Every structure is written in structure tokens, then in C-alpha cells.
Length: 175
Image (tube, rainbow, N blue to C red; front, side):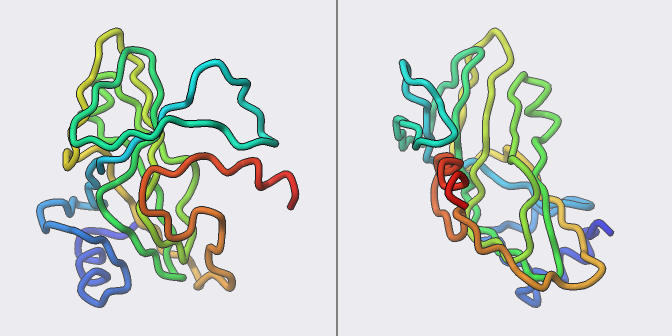
């Protein structure tokens, strides 16, 4: 069951869901708009990307950034998010952003118990450079109620992340 704006507001008021900072204008009929932070990671050139080794990134902190055509970046939401054990969430790009050729992805579900800023995968699929501005609404988070609360909450490698966070897939090899 997807939470409506009424359910979202109640959950925010009771602090069951935490989104910080948050303006009421970000609450949509069945989601909350999230905005772009100011940290980015760009894959460094001339490396072979392997799943069993850390990947090298260039860190960028800026209020404004141009993403060239056919380029990929990691970014972060401005908002810090906390999900309770009875909810899960997923992030979708806003259609207005997608219509410009910018694909916004958050790989997978946001598990119950997740807490942190959300790392976003951005891909400029267009033939034109796209200017990214910190604070601009970039995606939306949708909450879904679980039939029963999760027995085990998220304790993964991205818990409490604060900025654009690199892939840690190399840590999966030893598990």
C-alpha cells in the first residue's frame, strides 16, 4: 500500500518518517519531492571497473555543475531520510527532469531502517549539457507500508551516508 499525502503528513508529524530539511510544498499526492545536494562523484578515467576492487572517483563539491552529454555522475539528495521498520521506499526521477534527458536512478528499494542522504545515479542521455543546481527538485520518494514490520532493519554498508557515496560492491565479495 502506497502512502498518500495524508498518511505522509501524519507520519512526518509523529516523526515516524524523518525528512530533513523539508518544506510542505515538497509533499505531493503520493510522494515527497527531494532536491539535489552539492556533492558529486565522477568515475575516474582509464581504469577497469571491477566488482572485487574499490573504484576510483573524483570528488566534486559545488552548488552548480554541468553534466556533459552521455555522462554519468553520482549525486546526493539535500535531504536526510529516516525510514521506520514498517515502511519501505523507492526513489523515482521526476518526469519533468526525465523529459530533459536526465535519468535519475536510485538502485533498488530503500529498506526499512535506512537512515541517511540518498545517493543518486545521474545519467545525461541527451546530446546537450545539463546544468545541475543544488536545491533543485530532482526526484521523488514514494513510501509503501509493509504488511508487518521488518524483523531485521537495514544495517548495510550505506547506512548513515551523508554525501554522494561511492559503490561498495567490492565489499560483497567477502560476504
